[in-house]
Image (cartoon, rainbow, N blue to C red; front, side):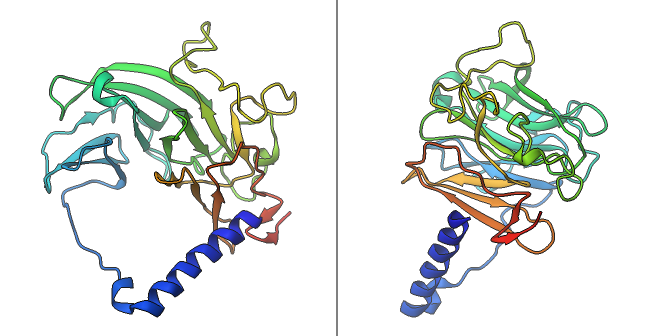
Length: 285
């Protein structure tokens, strides 16, 4: 778990430097920027759009905070399609297409179905009104069944390479009872990387994506081709550093240790982040 160690040292080192130079500059304050939201879980914006913030409500709505004002009508309401009854289920992720300015595409990640449900990625398109999307433009990209109602991950994001990344939790319950995170033939407990501009599965209406040929396990019979890295418990939030391409991943721990995993922008993938063998830097199972 040297990636964790490096990440923690980098963060602590930076914090120490800031405090030593000027403690006042290192202070962080909170301020309310919007009210009237229902269980907001994530916020983002298209590249080059400084005036709007798109806020996800867990129940299945995307709201817009425009110039500091929460618009009364949702940008998108798919609450009838989203399974949000479980505490960790719901509409969890949003990513704008790299060519959003020209094609109007954006991608949602949510839990659909009943019971434990399915992790799905759906593409939608904005209308001629930039503050309103059309729910009837739904295009199915990805679907994978969940084992339990928790550990659903939550973030989708386009990488510097133009591919779409998705972090999936280990399927839930406690202690990864199916050892899914270490099973290369399972997509749960993994970071995935797919190409949403092509379709390698034309006969499957629920799977409309392609496998990047440079994915680290392409052709390996012991791993699914979609896998970018593995051994995560629940990578709920993570992001790319836009200036370096480095990936910083927060992985929710089991009993004692949370993880911040660091993957440099030069990585070719294939990392094993350790779960359920390790929790943080400590042996778990």
